[in-house]
Length: 70
Image 1 (cartoon, one colour):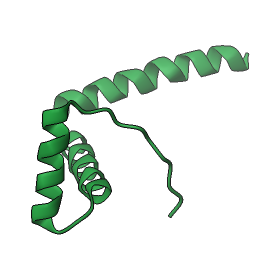
Image 2 (cartoon, rainbow, N blue to C red):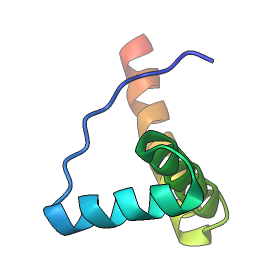
Image 3 (cartoon, rainbow, N blue to C red):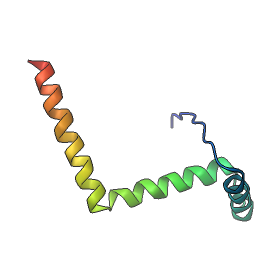
Image 4 (cartoon, one colour):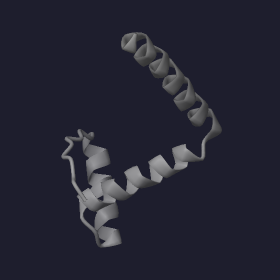
């Protein structure tokens, strides 16, 4: 799988807590973040309000793209 690097800035307390959680889970901080992101994305896939916002964005972009294609 191709990967993309990101920089994440956390306050000191969040960083300390994240390091402790990762250590307790026996995984790296990077893996802990990847798992948290995966869980968040999955939750959004099942959130009706979020899905409605996504549909709205798709419709808006479709109109713009159709207009540009004329």
